[in-house]
Length: 381
Image 1 (cartoon, helix red, strand yellow):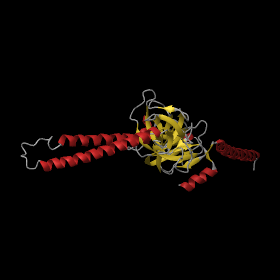
Image 2: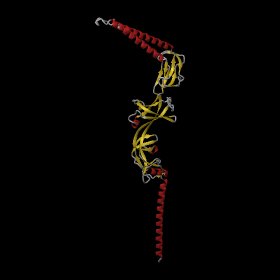
Image 3: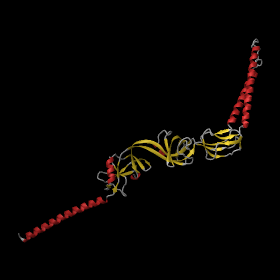
């Protein structure tokens, strides 16, 4: 083989080697770039979407107040001779118990006098009835046209009947006055302030005490207009869970005040709780003036997606498609409930929601799914 042929063959072999090396190097660089791209893709957490049946809960804060407040005054005058041991500031007295006893000696005497008057009036009436009967027998032969009511003693009989009724009325008053010397609790009561002392003489204008009715407590719960659609149409009877001091008691909504407050533009529902001071049951005592959290059970909605608050921004969420790339999705937010966002439309079952979006997410951005959350999402599908 000639020299120039050998040189040409060597040159061709060298060119082929250079070409093959260039191809291998380019392929390696592309693979490295792909691997590097995957290495820097943001790591995200996902969850598989599934609609559910959801009952709304409305939470608000309000003050506990008494259902009724009374300024207690006596109906008769007298000297205070005894008081209930709990008739003190802060005392609790059950309905019907005697709080104050007035001196009743004068009223006992008035009762005896009234009873004597009734007995005398009854005797007078019996006497007049007998005389009227005699008069009727004596005048039996007299023509009815000639008889007068006076001859038959009718006026005397009517006077005796009136006298008996008057005496009976006086007796009833004496009995009432005697009972009123025993001043009883009109309801289960908390004595807010006592204004009298033992031995003090009181009359019908004297203030004995300020009482709060503890048979029921009320909580006037503020509710915004946009929250009302999530409550049942019939508000009366809605269960209300009252939370305080690490415990809870159940009451119920009893009425709507029916007025939209001019300053706050809020509605007010009245929640009622029975026996707040646990006077008749073994329960936690809820004092008037306490500021409590109240949860109302609302309506139930179907096919609602409950999403974490951090995954929704401006009515938009991020999903991961089958190529592990981010895709934005506009959703219809029904309500934010605590740390959850309730979505009614815009999502499909089984889609993967990004619960921890990257700092600067973009449509089509490749991402890496955290293995733990990927396995959980796969099992929930």
